[in-house]
Length: 110
Length: 116
Image (cartoon, rainbow over all chains, first blue to last red; front, side, top):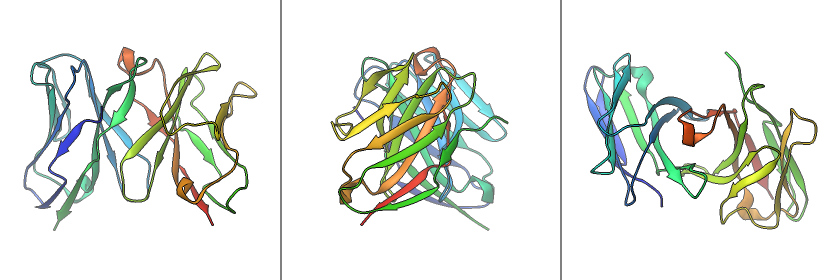
């Protein structure tokens, strides 16, 4: 089952914050986050493996609520370089291969 | 930084023709994947490959598709008889241990396939 991301798109001014949510109808034991810039490949940001886990680097962090079957990606004090489409990926199938959400397009304006 | 390399970057083919997309995964990675992305849409899982065999495939990956690792380094995706709806960006990815053990995927830069 494909995870559901919200919102579909966000427009920010530089320095503003954003939250992107990813939820699943089935039990989750891990969530991946990737960013894809226009015309480029998705780039791995982070993986969360445990309920309650939070991770981050620079000003991008994420949390994972296993009970609620959801994860959130937090972008703080956004920079122009944060623009792109953010995908969450959750395990699908018996081998746990990643199934991606439809993505959230983030545009950061000066 | 190790990279996943894909060739060609762009391929135009006529409907009904066979195409082979090539990928060189990162050398110490054990799990390999093909995904595709129709313009502006989500990244769709096609197939995963481990220990020289397919470990999982999606509904999209029908009899027209096949994968091989012919020489221990290259990883190929073949589409036997292309259709217009096969036009998409095809991404190869690899990971050290696979998703179940908590490692991220490294994606190649993709092959844009255009079927005319």
